[in-house]
Image: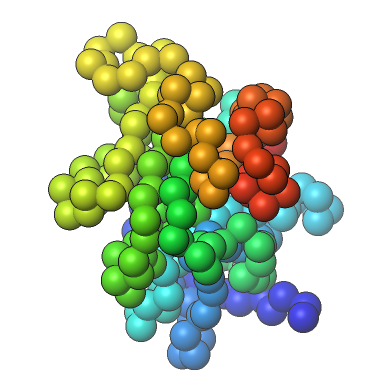
Length: 241
């Protein structure tokens, strides 16, 4: 089915750090915008005449709601046209045209097995949507371990929410791995060492969900292929960049 175009109006903007920003848009239409946790939309931004210049895809952080609002978190890319718009030009009240929902990287139907979610940067966004869906609908799951890599403490997204989930669900855990932080008492380095040291990586039923930059996905695939029984069924990924 061909994706439908919609118009949303920016309702709030939060500058989390110099390189991370969250914002929400409210759809002008009254009919609720339906999507699956983990999906994305493609925005047509005021960046030029050609489609390649204007179109950018972003994962939705929330789940469907009666307010018909969509939330996003994005990262700053130096010299990026979209980054210049979002970080320097976008204002509350601006209209954004987008199409969707799109994507097949969604919450798995079967959560009765160990799941390891691996994300870098804003790659954590689809996982936040999935976890919010699990909580809202009270979906039972065996275990989920989120391994989330970023650079600096100030760039961490959804930290307090992750802490709340860890307190609420005994079978949910997360590790935040920072590569450039000096004022950080948690894990330092990169996500690969953390998931490779996980005590369930060699189980036949574990499901790996990966989302992040192409280089991270490529390295993870090389690391995980020898460690799983059926890579096509046990490794799913969404990449960008």
